Image (cartoon, rainbow, N blue to C red):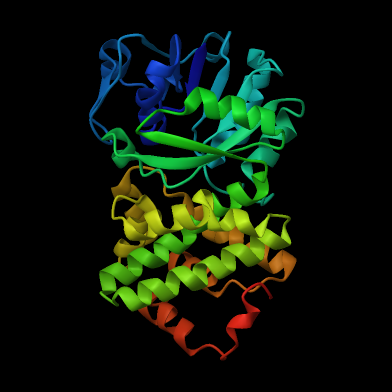
Length: 335
């Protein structure tokens, strides 16, 4: 079997290394300008952290060559690049029977579409699945065990991906036929993780963090269920599991954004310092627009959006959440 990984950022590199032994042939693709000589020649990189790939992994910037004969193609590019890469895949001759698995979490700016919807816009007959769960890249690279969801509208496709990508003792996969819930759970928790980082830096305490996770999950569930998700999906790996991991860990780029906001840094400076994508930043804008469109209340996401995109004092923005009109918890799934 052949695996192709499209996008060799931190998560793409880690997935390439993790899954190499599962396949006879492995190819990693990125744009030529994104490939270092060290990675191409020596299968090694030190940024964003040290990764040494197996000699059998082929690195290329030739997309047609990369996908030729691939059984599974992992899409691990920034969400803002998904549509463009799918157009390129069509031009490169991707086959309908090749399974395209998206591993990037977010919503498209402007259209507010999930990534599977974007993919199907460009490749309407493609077999697709999504991979999502508590998968902090550095922990996976270190071999620490975790689990994730593989979702597809066709459960047989999900099962094929499950069997191909499962790694004993390290990477346990569960199938799911609720793509909406898996995608939204994985995307929207990034916004809540920014708030969690803010709480960490302000030393508000564990009570604050517990309250944030509970009320953050309420927002995620309200939006997702309104858009067709199965509520039980949000209590799974790509919902609560991913939310807990991302909100608790300083390895999370979104959590890091929140901590830096709490220090008074501006978002442009934060992203430049990170040097990598923090999807929660753009997703905060998308979820606020989406929530307004469907008339769903998302106060925490609104606060993150204001903290990221306005010049208001971030601490005051967050404390305003404590002084909103009182309500009953029975409204958990209501507007």
